[in-house]
Image (cartoon, rainbow, N blue to C red; front, side, top):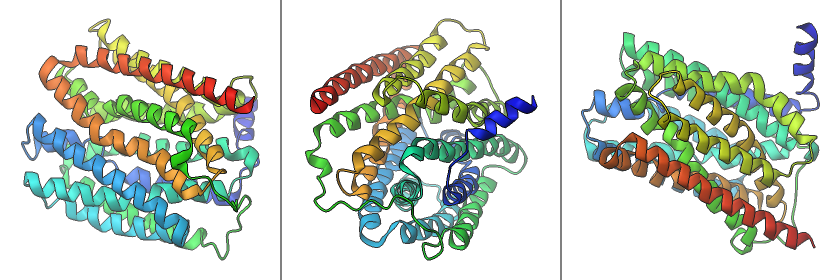
Length: 401
């Protein structure tokens, strides 16, 4: 056991202290965003909105994310990642607290949109900061460490969130979200000030290539958009499926979602380090991850046994562990051709646009054709994503020849 633990710790060797601080800031911030997995339940249970209402609210969520990500990328290239991160975190804290006081359809749509505009300016800035403070050979593992922080926070967040809902109600979640954003801001100011923290891979491109002229990147972008639509079902339609079809309580839903983060925390870094030393390409690994996530939906239709929920979650988790770090690493490698903020904001924007259509599509499909047929449609989308990745792999091979 001691040797196993020592080997696990060795997978973190070589990462800069700034990346560790960035991971801690991300953990503090992510642990507090426990309202997000319960948002669809909150809108139904507390505000009595319909599925149609929720689908439009989640589209406002995604639209705000798109706008925020685009602004974040532009601001990062113009004023720097540090200023963007500080202002985004602090402002998001106040907006999360204010969100709980909105109770009409229009006000909630506007509120969710504004929260996501401000919150998601943080994401491209954070990825640029991570790239700057990571040595080239450590970038994939740096991405993985940030994801570990996100998922450790996500593991604790829903579990604690479920307890808070059952004791003091949904309102407490908004206060905790806001306060943790403010705490993350204070930590960021103290430990990651660029006057103290020194970059190790500060890339400057004299003649940057526009991301809009990079055809392989756009095939990758569309694939990530499809991937996002499928993956995001676990944050909107899936919690409803757990409750309506399998009669799980909010606390049980929180525990099941929390297992995803726990598995990632324990297994992802050793898995990524091992995969980095195999013959597989980033595209090949993304392809495999996407297949596993599609399977996670397919197995739900095979049986009504409640244990299939855990099996589906395991398939999704392993797929996520493989697809996300290597897709992010691919985007960072490609970003060396142009402005980092522009490239990485487009990578994040693929998932932001998926927020616009993914939640809306999933909820409307469930409302009209039911859960089982919706899961089959997600499997079909996964197959389209696989074909696009195979096409991208072919284009990149021709690009090198």
